[in-house]
Length: 176
Image (cartoon, rainbow, N blue to C red; front, side, top):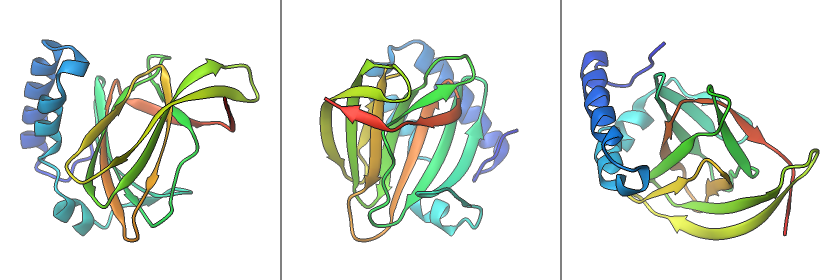
């Protein structure tokens, strides 16, 4: 099922073209192409939508779900933040995530997984950053990350997952 905030045929045509171009590049060399694709989704248009799903820590709006990618918008209230997590995909692996902030500021921490022994996953922090409007950050499939609103007002972000996300794996984590 495809959920969109724009004309379906136009979005599908743009998405097909985007995926063709993306296949010719390495993911880490394609940030300008990803930025261009995500720029079609505006804060004004997304915030005008009434179809936001309340999650435990934020609001979520699925925009596009295909076999090769998914796009989801997130609306965060002040101090909303996720636990460290990874993005499971339908191919029994993890997705490469690209996150663009449209409004507000995000706090983003990325960690390397040191030990996946349950019930706790041991992590080593790689870096943390503040992501401002218009900036894109990414999470590699082998990484875990935490994301949250760093500002006093609402924060809006749009997330592109290469290989669509099945679910988000939030675990209690030990950080070394």
